[in-house]
Image (tube, rainbow, N blue to C red; front, side, top):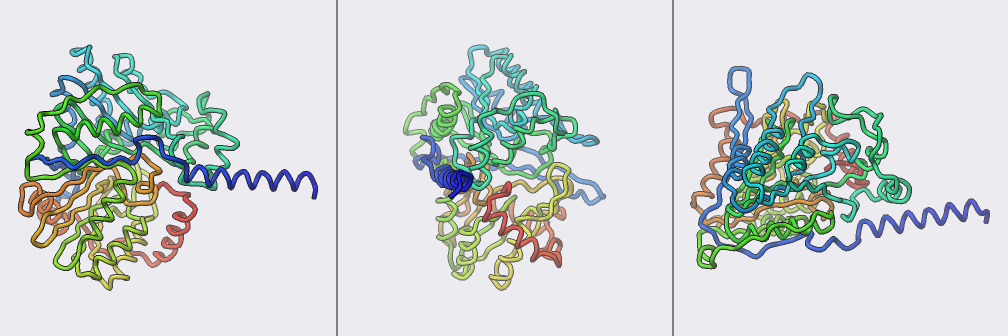
Length: 475
């Protein structure tokens, strides 16, 4: 055998070994975390909605961003924030509310008036253009004394093994910084990007979490504080008490493998203050979200109602779980984003359109599917709501799309799990929210399934399945 063939054979074996290891290696300590169950008397549901105003324009109802600012204002001991997207990059001709700068300003003012307060801002390297260029907002916060931590996602498992093996073998060693020369696909007004940064971007994985915490409360959201995302429809839950300590524990794990130092300590409330209350809550991240999602769906049967609002739905176990729950007699409504738009760029409807078609056809129409009526924004919600006939409701919401990348311990994700008594205030709020959107109460919030079911849907189904198998996708 020639030396060339021997070398090529050894290279192939090496790449296969890298693929196997990087997709199955041990997770960093503290990743895929589940807190104990806590009882509490208060869980607040918040929502952002963009919808037609009936006069040819759009209206917005926005609660989440203002509440984040209030949490910052109310904090007395510490602030810990973890947000996936945080930048003001936009495409030419676009105009959005300057929410990123607004939060940066509020944090820097807080640090100025409370110089001894520990303020920690954790985010993903997408906001530094994968280390091609500094983010002016983050740099301004650093100068104010705020601790900014860019997550090192390399210790996480790889979700695109064929590409990742090549990237880790040949390209990761050269870093990403330098003089960029390739146009910024995220923003025509953003800095140019190095080829090495684009190569890392293609090794798709992220710190996708969205949480804001102080010693007083914590908000777990599906939404980013990001100018180009400012009009997206999102949901959030706000909680108080001992679960904040678990949120800090989960964030400390990120700092431990990202070189971010130590988070402030949380002094828990007296046990009597958190040992009672109508609601049971737990904080879950990464693969633990998956466990609780499947548990909730598998626990639904005759007389129960499953409502799901989702930006991306593509995970096979979740899809099969919905079909099986339908066969058991559960009533199911799924409200999806049409995957039409991404920050001003057109999309082709993958994965939601082929998944919607599958759910409808395989359930013989028992699973009802509708589309959120988006314009240039996204229905960015990630919400599961299971109402048990004669029993408590289960609800989950946060950063996690129901896709392999988000559920299988690849991305960093976070959700709040809640068990609420039927008829409780929170249960009524969730029921009102979903019924309003589904039944178009007050506006045309949702569209029937045929609105986005094209004749070429089977081609998108093949593309979606192929992307899922190969991992060459952002979902």
